[in-house]
Image (cartoon, rainbow, N blue to C red; front, side, top):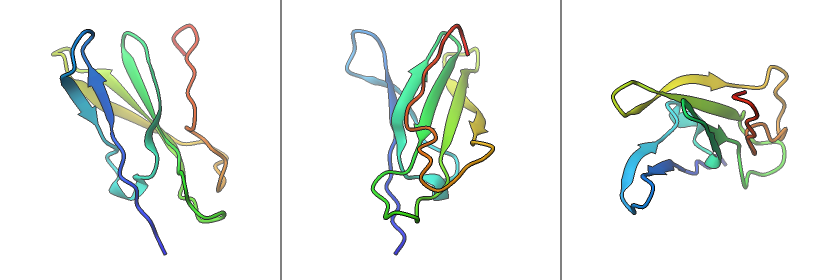
Length: 102
C-alpha cells in the first residue's frame, strides 16, 4: 500500500501571523515529509523532503529543495538535490545545517 502525506512549508513575515508565501514540492510523487527540516540565509531557503512514517524498506527517495528570491520579493524553486548514493531509509533531508553560506 502506497501512502502519500502532503506537507508544506510556510514563510511568515517577522511580527506577523499572515503567511507571506507557501512552499510545496514540484514533484507530487515526492510528497512525503516536505517541510520537516528548513534552513535559510539571506538568499536561499532549503526545505527537506525526507519520508516519515513509511514501513521499513518502502520509503521513497528523499531530497532537499532550494528556493531563491526572484528579485521581486517572491521565492522560486531553483534546485532539487538528492544524495548521490541515495538508499532507502538514509534520512537525507531529515535535518539541514548551513554554515558560512554553504
